Image 1 (cartoon, helix red, strand yellow):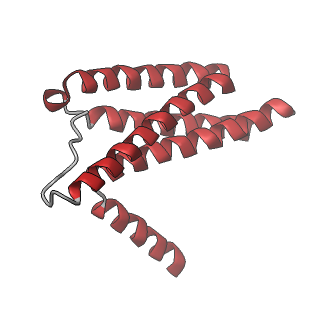
Image 2: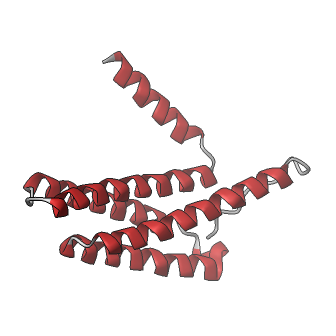
Length: 148
């Protein structure tokens, strides 16, 4: 019980103290983790007899990913982000549609395709934050622009 409370407190503190860029990376990490779990269950399900518990687990993992993507969508700032925000919104919309269809068809390839693209976006954010942090060392007031 104490371990669970400590872990929960740690996670809450980590989220509350994270920068905007770190929060976006955390969302991408969560989406990737859920898709990995869903693909693992889907692969196990395809290898043998269809297990209703696995099918439900696959659906839950995909839906959680869609919720994360929706959170990323609503965090976009279209005024400051301009075309980048519009393009990300379109991409996130496509992700959700593709995941919906992949979930219905139980298509691991489509899920993996979305996962790969989310991983690429995550890696790009890591690079942006690292670059911003290295530039910020010479400019104390530098901050990351999360407009897109």
